Length: 144
Image (cartoon, rainbow, N blue to C red; front, side, top):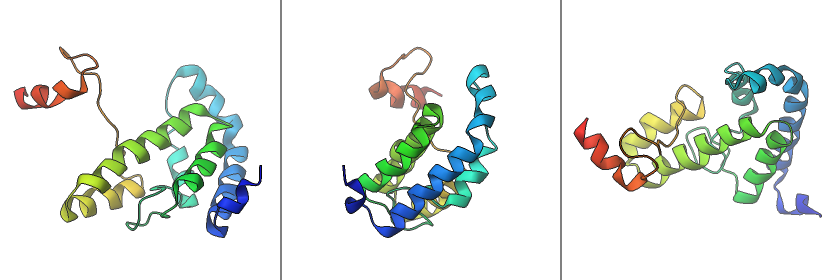
């Protein structure tokens, strides 16, 4: 499809390195898939790739565009959809919200360690007594 023409040389290198890394570990992921557990050891491999942060500018992130992000996550998803989901939630939901809505102090405090996987970010959608009602999460948080 000629999509490499839409990627920077940096993104092509990151994508290719991601594919190689995933090929080198894919067989080790099977037991985690079977047991529905997370392979925490993978975080070090992802950290070394320097892909975390995906589209965020600064904080040690690669600052990719959306197509470049998709190319990298695709390489992960081809081998393990769960790990790709983890990367997308951590990056596109967790870190992107802080990047878009956080103040300078919050960004520095949260994004830098999140890029290094010292913190893992997510979005809590389902809560006791609320179900999947994201608009009510504030109400639940206020009651706690």
